[in-house]
Amino acid sequence: MSTHPGPRRLRAPASLGAKLVLILTGVGLLGALALTVFLATVITPNFNRLEKSAVDGHVARTEAVVHDLTAKVENAVRDYGDWNSSYDYMAAPSKAFEEESFSTLAMVNLDVNGMAYVGNDGRILIARWLDIEREADVPAMRNQLTQAIQRLDVKKALKSNSSAGFYLKLGGALAAVGVAQVRRSDGSGDPRGYVLMARAITSSQLSNLLQLKAGLDLASRSKEVTITPSRSRIQIGVPIPGPDGSAIASAAYSVPRDLSGLGMQMLVIAVIGSSLLLAVVLWVLRRMIARLVLKPLNRVERHMGLVRQSGNLSLLTDGQSQDEIGSLVSSFNSMLAQLKDLREQLESQSFALGRSESAVAVMHNVRNALNPISTVLSQGANREGGIDRVTLDRALSELAKDDVPPVRRQKLVAFAAAANQAFEDEREHRKQQLAIGREALHHVLEIIGTQQEAAHERPPLDACDITDIVAQNATIARYSGDISIAFAFPGKPHWVMASRVILSQVVGNLFSNAAEAIAATGRTSGSISVTIHDRDERVEIVIRDDGEGFDPATAPTLFQRGYSTRAHKSGGLGLHWCANSMLAMDGSLELRSDGKGLGARAVLTLGRAAMMTASEAEAA
Image 1 (spheres, rainbow, N blue to C red):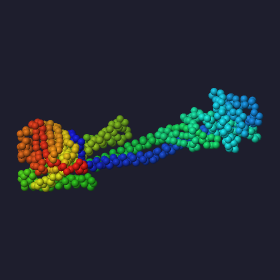
Image 2: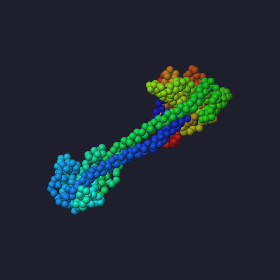
Image 3: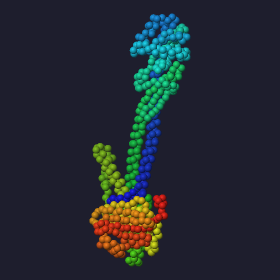
Image 4: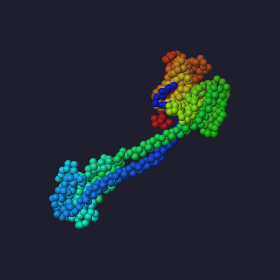
């Protein structure tokens, strides 16, 4: 059965089951959020500490490499400083000493690029800079070396020691420098000057020593180690000290954040696993709700089926509980008792009034309103369970065994999931049926109570939305028979002056007649469309069906008391009552048809509630 209500949808009232599902969903979301926060506070800090330890290790290795480079040059220059030949050379410089000690072979063996002898007065006796790879002098670098020596305060750099190691910037290059006092080999004698050695340091050398891609940042002056994390890497800068201990450059490189990434992966896995466990717990809770809530509701449905079949409005007395379901059963019994009392009063009035129009019209309307309840209960009583409980229990018990083959286990899990979905579908279907039946039963009581008060007086007219009335009766009419009916009606509110209860009865009767006309064609499906038009101070409602229709010449007789086009019907007061009710509300009702087999149209005309504004209509 399909409906086409346009932009307006047919909705069932909120039920206890829907609220329970919403609550469980909320609990699941809050629980997953709480688990995420908890796991994040446990896992993330620990991996952050591991990452910090790894970064500290990189920094320590870099500082060790930076120190070792100057220490090696310092050890080499100390051998030249504590040497009798150097001591004698400083007193009397000789060409032979220079050719031997400053030879290309000697500098290559020492693995230094630059060497110089400097007097106590700062005078440079000899200086040389060699490109070790090409074994050729580099005059430009020699000039940079001599200029740096002239700017260097050697005594301050030594700090009362006989030798020292530090770094110097030679133009655009960086060099590890060692300087030592020139003394005799045994360390005696007044120092006669200083010997200085320098080794050029490049980014490739630093990368080889650190075993990672590193570079020299000659513009950096930071005295502290700089650590700059990004999303996937950590940028590290280690200061390189100059003669006075302050930074003249830094060793810069980046390392991947593997540990933090691993921590994030573990966090995601832990959150997913915990969420799945929480989902299983919530699934068990839903199963318990099905056992404790839906099963008692099914007992109420079965009793409603017995009431429909026997016509005896007996109360449901077996197995009542003291919880909310028991309260629902008590309310249902109260409704049955009230309906029984009202039916007895109606029978008494019908006997007293005989064939009066009022009593028969009430029963006619009650019959139309009870049809949806009968249909809903019939469908609910005849509905068979999709999954056998014994089979499901056997599958679950087999799943609990450890020796089930994987393929079999997958099939059992799929079967259990399908069973759970079937139970959920059955619960939703039962909820919709109960909501429609409850609404229709409330409609019955409203009809009987209102008709009794307004039987002999003109009904009060109030502003009401005819679109909402059509939507409500369309919901009920869909369950009024065994055929599939597609409804189409506008979604925009249209306000008319009428009695809402009486107008709802009129529309319900016309929908019922249209459904009977469609069924009379022998088809199993049909359509009913409603159009609403504003005509000056009036509103015209046209209800069109594709049923059997009628001869236009017989239209006046359709409103006669006792007339019916159905051979199995004993009355015909429905349309007669509808026409009188429309007249009582200052309206009119017309029936039109283009002929047999061409469908029919019911045209209702009512006064328009002109005082309603658009905003007031939405608020109403």
